[in-house]
Length: 528
Image (tube, rainbow, N blue to C red):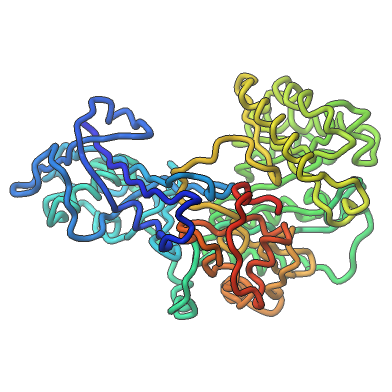
């Protein structure tokens, strides 16, 4: 029988004055064990007896009393919305009994680990995980569990690794653990500093390849156009930067623009990234230049491709992007990418006054095109978007309600998400972390080499022409964003506060800001 422990910590709005809770606090507190025959099926909330196969360890079914923090393995997830209104946050720890304590154990895949502010992120082919420590993963090279485990807590930790498929009994040639160590020299910068969650290397870098675009979208936040901007990064500077992040083992690189396919070496740079050691590639396109040949190359190189379609009809989309025939090109690009088997494909739709009436039709169009993921993005007041009518908080809430209805009505096999709107679904209470990833796991690099936490902020962290990626990642402006939010809230240890594209939340991390209370209406992380 599989087993798991449920750990919860009440900390709702009435407890804002409570001591700050760290993730380790509410994972390892109040763990109890009872039997449940469904435990092996991986339910969200599981109970089960401890699998004590070693003589002298705790018997199954008894209450676990831990003298030291229990090591945990969790599926890594970040909830974009804030947990302020949640009555509690909990974590579910899944375990599966080891059938043999003598047989040798092996890693079951190539694993890549890098340090978080607490614990580690571990990536495998089966997903991304959060672990407290790496000692067991480092020790497993054909070693039996009896030789590794010293007590019942060790057994439970191995059972978690076994449940998630990170370890097993069959020898696997791919089973190696790589631990990123270049960032270790930056750890002293955080000594004595109370931080929220962040990774010691970026998990994702968004890299603008060009400011050129063959469209002139009325809402473009980057004011991209067919004219080339002077002073941009050279091809060699792009190659050098990609080599830099490749040596680091960057988990995810997104090639952006402008329109990235307008860069003459778009495919070549993607190939360089693959060979340099970048672990995952994604991109976004308007589809105009995507013919059969390019679609085949993109499907091979990129794990995820996003196609921008801002209207469910040719008239609406073409008017927004400023080019006749754009809608048909975008739809054809989707079909070609699907034909060539791109691993993940989604459609993005920026919601503005010109197209809000076609949101429902966009979901239907996605179904017809065979795309299972649609993302609605809020109009952002940057670049040419400043000249457009902006959404009020009331407008955003109404749009969010519509998105919730799309999700609840459940178009078959269509996943609807959004960015920049108030919560359109129930906020999960079991995410690993909460809040804005900008500067915590996300970095943006513009065409001039400028580095920001994300493209929506005006926070400047330096330039790739002047410093290495890790020096920039641990620069003072980035470190400032990693301070624990000055919210008087028990969740501040696992919540990085709201979107930095919002001036209210950005102000929270300015040097002059000393104390900001969590707003009573701040549960959505969008607007104040």
